Amino acid sequence: MFSLCAKPANASGSSRASQQLQHGTCKSCNSTVGNQIKGGYLLRYKKQVLWSRWSEEWVVLYDDSTMAWFTEPGRSSPAGKILVKEAPEMLAIAHWTGQIPRRPPLPEGVSVSQLIALGSRRKRSKVYWMIAKSEEEVSDWIAAITKTLPPPPQIELVVDKPHLTGVLLRPIVRIRPATSTEVSARRKNRHTIEHNTTKVKGEAAVAIIKKSVQDNAEPKGSLACALPWGHGWGWATLPNGIWSGALTWSQCEDSITLHALPTTHCTNMIEAPCAGGIYHTDVGPFDFHGIEDVGGEDFDYAMDCGDFIF
Image (cartoon, rainbow, N blue to C red; front, top):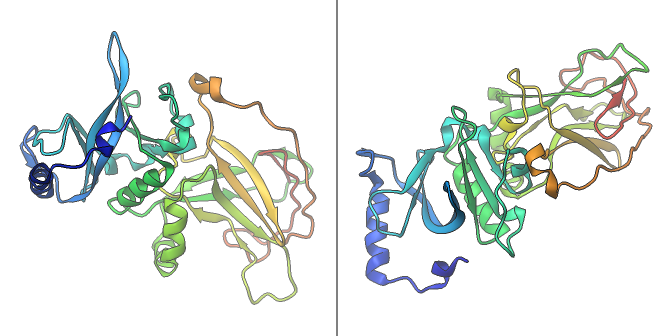
């Protein structure tokens, strides 16, 4: 596996490949796809009628978000390609690939954290599966791909009926485009955003709820967080943007964070662990006055692994 990666590159071959790939000319489609951003060897899953296997190929990312793969460096015509920005919500890495139907079996010694899946909105059954050498390399690829994509969306907790009390409700979580104000705020915290975006994680923050304090100088919390590309949210959302995946929560000192978790499609249930127990917590001291997008009423939460009691 990745045998070609360990071989010393031929100087003339590498130079020729670099020259051809930098120009980004795709002879198979007779068009220019852009300048090369990143290149490297990945294993790509090839599914045929009689057999299926993982094959090592040279993959190139261009600045227009095109990912093309070649049988070897220096080839001018790719074996295949996909424009990621056409459906960036269908891009999933690591454990987030469990949301995609019929995930292929992995080679021996390979973990899910090394997976990259490129999906299509027009044909959901067409998914390109790739394996990187390590989790760190997956982070490198998603960081490079993110630079070619528009700003990632926001995932938020929607509190639409805070007047209801004592009713067990699953929190409504939706995904929406980021506003210009949110994009500007991300630019100010660019280092933090890039760190959270490129790191391979098994969860995504939805809302951060802080305890009420007497000093109102600082914000009490936020009901919306940036959702990094690579979480494949297009596989777990309804047409209206409502998140249909799993939810959980964590508490740290004076705040509670609601998390979105990768779901496991029924075709991948062989690898899925059994569901955990039920947990409840009393968060009565938490005040929602002043939190963005909330109407100003106080209410207590009790959570049941994804359900809130309002």
